[in-house]
Image (spheres, rainbow, N blue to C red):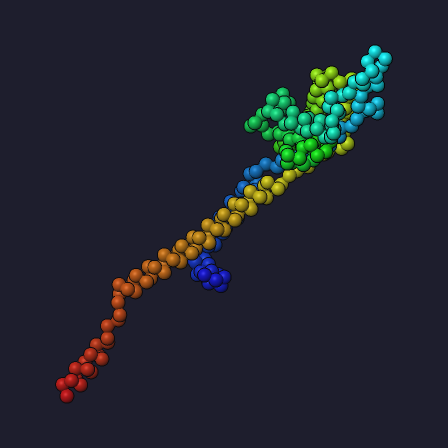
Length: 241
């Protein structure tokens, strides 16, 4: 069925297509208005080596310098950022931050790239918070940023790194003002609209098929029309002559 044939079917079955289309618009609008708006806030932090360097200079009693274990390999800052991202994304830390699976506030942490396989590519810690309340979206970002500093210091204490070699976690972008995100609302409404249009087209074509089948059956049941009575009498008169 080509385009114009489909348009002809829709025009012929307008009494089905029009109500279905109006119902689709109503459903899409209802979905758009019912889905709440989420707000998001983001902060960007970077790991840096202290000015004194990654190791403590040797002394006469200990000729070997004491090195911060987190910086004792290539890409130490990148690896440290990766460790922080993994820690902050765990369910245990999220629970301690007051995040519940069914809650209205969430957060996620990465190093600027959502692919977990690329976490060691940069010494950044990007924290994004989302919530139905704008103040909560920004508040969770602030709390997670403070927790990131605590976790970084704790790991270095556990590894017994010299305090003067501790990695610093500096805030490059302060927690941004919460911004509304309407992309999810629009996508949901568009999906409902697309399904509704498909259903309207399907109903129209189905009605056309049913009506065509009924008309064909009625024509087959009625059969050919009988010859007029006047023509029959004329044929009989001709035969008698």
